Amino acid sequence: MELPHGFDLRSLRVFQIVVEAGGMSAAARRLSLTQSTVSQTISNLEAALETRLFDRDTRPLAMTSAGEELYEATRQILQKAAEALETTRSGHDQAGLSSLTFAMVESFANSIGPLLLHDCMHLARRWRIWSGISPDHQHSLMTHGVDIAVIAGDELDTVEGLERHLLLSEPFVLVFPADFPNPVDHLQPIEELPFLRYSLRSAIGRHIERQINRLRLDLPAFAEFDTATGHLAAVANGMGWSLTTPLCLLQESHQLPHLQVIRLARGGFSRRLTLMARKGELGQIPERLAVAARRRLHERFGVAFGQDYAWLLESCRIPSEAVKTQDPAGQT
Image (cartoon, rainbow, N blue to C red; front, side, top):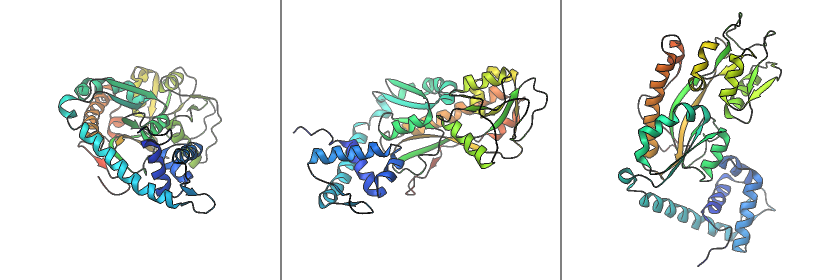
């Protein structure tokens, strides 16, 4: 039997989340999708089934009798699909996956990614390593575009059905040109130099902007960068000052002689890097990658920062054991 367009596992998953979240807006947030995408997915599913699944005239959104029947069936279908996937991949620890798509934030991909691939190449016969804007990776993970992602944002913290492995907690630090005579140890406008931003398209840019707003600082917009490469090169060349993290400095460690890195004495804040995968799909592979990633992070930080920036190394928190944070339902 050929299934109609719009009736597939992805559509059923969206339908399930709409029901459990209590509406399309809440489901869109949980899935990291736009509300229009969720609404269109439901409309396509209803068209494929030739029936209405929700009574849109009621508030809150209520299922029709057909919707209730489909919801019960959907839970079983998705559970069976997950079991089939896990069973099919049950031998991957010995033979390796046929392919693995791994998305990473830029700073992690460029500094740790190649080393991690070297250590774990036996886990898959073909690897796809993606880097770039972190929010894009979150969407790809939730829509099965990637298998595993290293994510710096917190947008997926409350999403169910994910396993999470903390890799790193790192502080934000101030960076100034090496020859700047009056660096400060807290966030404030500086007359001599403009503030250089990370783009708000990136998770790190959004994180920094939230802290600036929290402290009610007026830092005029001058220039913003999508990548740590351009951002730290601009600081090293005397174009301004900014905030960054040890991982970004690790990626651009060749710039350290041209920078002053200052600990935030007041208004300090940090970010977490977490390896995430859809729960139950890849067996022990996510945990193995996390263990290898932590080992490489510790090693590379020690080499890059050494005695000159011992405080920077000490301020980073890398779990020494395999740590799984709980999902929202309290399951490890």
